[in-house]
Length: 526
Image (cartoon, rainbow, N blue to C red; front, side, top):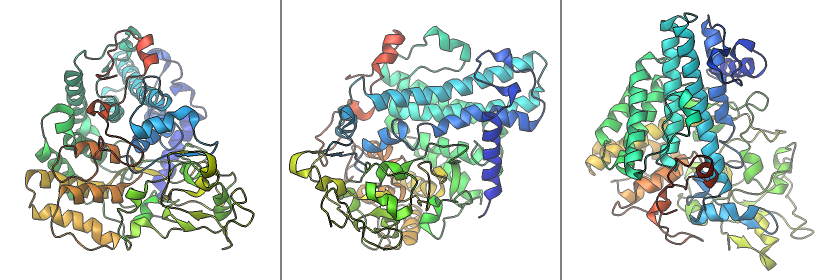
């Protein structure tokens, strides 16, 4: 597979960090704990903690990944008999009724601020060693810049999910209970400006070789981050920045570093480190960077026999019927219903024999249904509910795999660059010919007919079909709020969800954080 050596390089860096480089043990938070950093390899190993944090809450159980997906119309975790009620947290997430003591929300806050704190601590450590004459300033400068951009990435998601949070640009300030802005909108705009300034100040010092910097921040990844920032600027600051978004996405397109894969699913294969669309990925690995357990979270219990998994899946994540039906029948992204895309219909084991769910009936052939009759499934529905809701198999599942998958997660992907540029052009001119051409590139790869024109409904639906379970749907739905002709938006009612107030476009600051830091102001409406 192309560029596989760079995944091995990134994993070796993570291994070096996790298993014993004494001079860069960052579990101690005193900046003078590092005695020296003399080579590029030692610098890269020192960055390990800031990147390994990404694996912790991305593709698993509680935290950023499920919080941003289950709160949209593309994913739900229905209660299946006695399974998956989990204190009601996923029902609350889906219905936009998350309280201030909501577990996944608290997990997301902790996950993202652990990234902020790790990057801030590394920046301080590098700066302290430079001041002490133990580091060459020029060598340290670029790595400090890389940490500033990665910190901007963690803050990007804090801006999206919480809106108004403390800005920590000095690790020493962490212990002082830093406040957020008492004015929500002013605080959100301040954070937007901080991220932008940090990335712009650091981008030129980043690597211009995305393959050699696989799994790390580089110039194209920084441009993607800026492009997404500008794409959402009107929502987050009140000021549109569409042309600025186009500038950043154009730079990525014109770099010549990326192409659309001929096979959509090549982006999500077990060995996908060479995918030509990947701009920035989390290089998951069952040994060195575990945590991506989508198979376990979404597949039916009996699917263990389809892939001979080491452990039984948990029968959780499913998609809504309306989202499934948004795909045209010949759309390759919907998959074959059995082993790729969205799983529906009769299911079979690895040898082609019917999967028998004896908990439904002694001879019941498992048949995954598109429709989910009720979010809270009790009584007579307790057993049949086991097979309701199309399951996700967009990422390839490995025969004989452990719960921790080896597929890299493409956080930034080239197809999204094309769709995002198209949207930014369309926002400025709904009849823009290039915008239509870019969207039709995506549709051509999917094997469906080209659009003759773009509308809000077509744009947001196409983004959903192309980017499902890649964590962009919530942001997209919010961005299309108030756009005449748009399809489903974040606050609109959908299956098992009533109309939600606009303050639910951000999550509450966890109550335990406010209790620990009285300088924090709760988000409006909570």
